[in-house]
Length: 230
Length: 230
DNA sequence: CGGTGATTTGATTTTTCTCAATCCGGGTGG
DNA sequence: CCACCCGGATTGAGAAAAATCAAATCACCG
Image 1: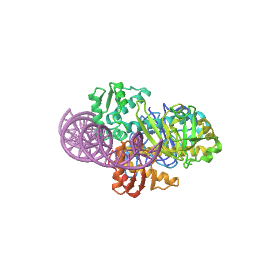
Image 2: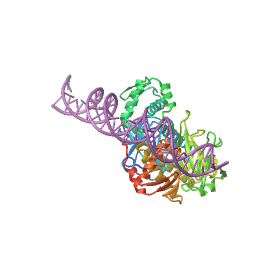
Image 3: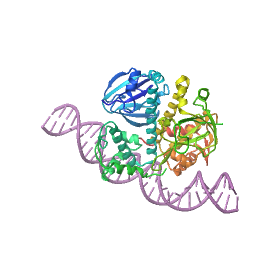
Image 4: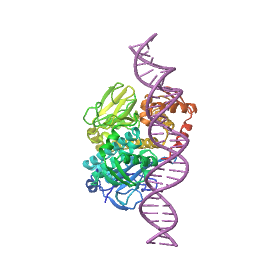
């Protein structure tokens, strides 16, 4: 069962208010290490509830109602980093598939980190990787056009799924066009059109949510040559 | 003298390859605490070199030459977080003003963190705040139009300058229109036009790099109502 | 006082958004 | 079993936003 690593201190209507850490059977993060030093609370979650496994989306919202998907996380991802600023709510995590999570108290986790250097390192490394990935997406969203953004997302999904032991070229999108658009800073229609164009070029094959990457190098080449200069 | 907190492990042509921490006299970060536990190397830097004080810009670049400003940091900001992933280069830091920095070795810093809980907490809190701010910008860039993005940036500058003891309404931009555009995901001409529009509306007064915020509430109201729905 | 880089402004093109209609598949209830 | 329904996806046409190309202006510096 796919699981997700999540760290939170609080959330609007999803997580209990007390600081806690939600964690799973990660790839990027060494869960064995974690389980040895921080007693987890295992919890099964249904799709539609908050935080779980397989695939989740993180969203951020502003007071005036604007909302944006900030990322799609798969098993092994570290979530809720931002919540370390005590008491500050930053984003929600919503399950896109059924799955399972483990839950930890943040304070206990930090204490364990202090005791166990290896855990500290694992935590630091995972966190750094997340920040790195986020920065990379900022670059993508800031410099590439719609078609290129979609191409980048599909390649990213492929890469991450492959790391989890699945096919990098054939997969099913677990989110709607609107969610993809929110993440990429595009309208859902623009996402659809971009996918259609990629299909027309023979780079991918789209059938609603079923994706078949036919020419990964072609997609990469598409991204390599930016349409905008910024 | 304004200074900047920076944490790095490596960089392209700027910082020495060995893991190190660059840090200054911060507001957000408790430097006193840090100085007590991690011996700093003081270093004066000239504008045009990497990492310094007063104001710096962080940039990220991809292999194909795309580049984007990921943020403008003032005294007290924590830089180079992402570099904690050992050996990974993520961004460059370029000085926009003359100033001063202090430099620490990353390993020594982490050791100090382990010994001193207060330092650990300060580090964690600062880091979380940085991530939080970054997320907030992602939302802004993903949901607002050009004029609103510029308004948000000006308000942000004002807020941060005020926290450092300067005027929140009158200040001089230290960066070019192109750099602003890169950060906001806009062309420099679009930035100029947005500023002109804000001026025409009477919300601000622009004179090249001199900014006078005449109606901060008006700017905030402008941002409150999104132009795009995403 | 000319030169250079930055900024501003204008005209035009491109991209993306917006609005609207249609299509498609899965699920439901008769 | 089938007609219907509904959310999501697709497609089309027109409007709006921003990029692009081009030119003029400005400030500063040697």
